[in-house]
Length: 179
Image 1 (spheres, one colour):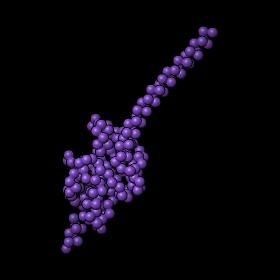
Image 2 (cartoon, one colour):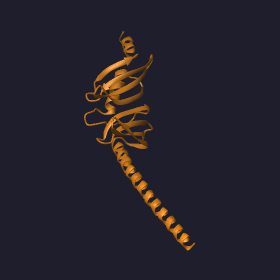
Image 3 (cartoon, rainbow, N blue to C red):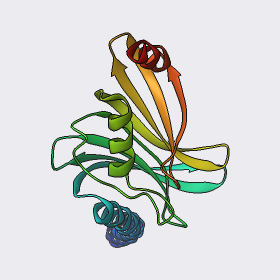
Image 4 (cartoon, rainbow, N blue to C red):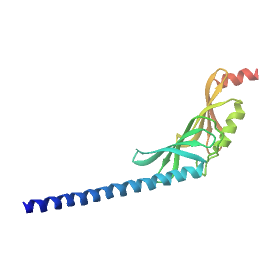
């Protein structure tokens, strides 16, 4: 019986040590993940004054992508996708205003504020939502604008700030104003 009594505490002690080692391993892996998340959160916060609400890690075409939901200081909300290897912004979308902030997605792009002003000046209408995304190898801003006759889309080249195309009922509305 003494042998059994001695073996049981040793087995319990071994299990505690292996459980402790297992916990330390998981904690270390979790801490590493937090460091990367905090790097992405810091990067996004450097682009726009905001509060990062949620960050998810996803994989697209073999690349690690971070998807972050943020709230701006003015009360707007955005979703930003960042390539973790290059710290490139791949996509931004906002469907809730106010859009009273500015963000410059990269060094080769006009700022969101410049693109927004261009869209608002062209049609003197309220922006419903917007997105920054790649289309046919080039980045562009897409604005959905509320008009008297419905909703329309305006695309602006992110590099030059020039209008690419107008779709929807904006064209009809502009023709009616000119007549």
